[in-house]
Image 1 (tube, rainbow, N blue to C red):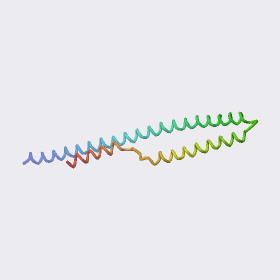
Image 2 (image 1 turned 90 degrees about the horizontal axis):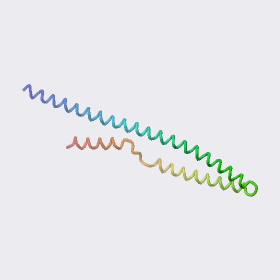
Image 3 (image 1 turned 45 degrees about the horizontal axis):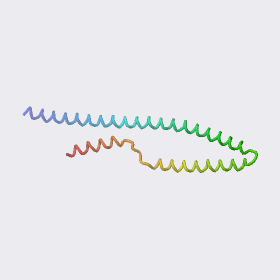
Image 4 (image 1 turned 180 degrees about the vertical axis):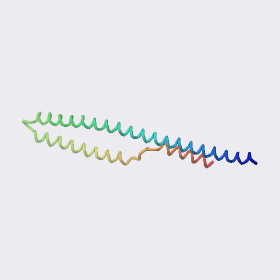
Amino acid sequence: MKDAGSGLAGSIKRLLSTLTQIASVRLELLANELQEERLHLEQRLVCFFAALVCFAMTALLLTVFIVVLFWDSHRLLAIGGLSAVFFVTGVMLVMRLQQMTQKKSRLFADSLAEFAKDREQLNE
């Protein structure tokens, strides 16, 4: 009788231990994914702002170059044309940014898949 009780208690302890380990591993996976996503976001932001500064300087210097080139003959046409080009480019970039923000994020996709696998195994 004593063996049956300790066997049941031992099984319950092992079950709780296993469930605790599963939860611990899944939480570690979630934390790792969050940290990875944060690092990727930081890297993208640094690259984005560096590229933004470079492109802004290029656009500014190119604009000055073209205006000086056409200073005697068509300076107003050059300024207006370049302004239109920058405006259209800005509108296209805003539209692209809206498309990017509407895409669904993959944050925690791996963890959610692992939780689904766990749920399927527990239901068997």
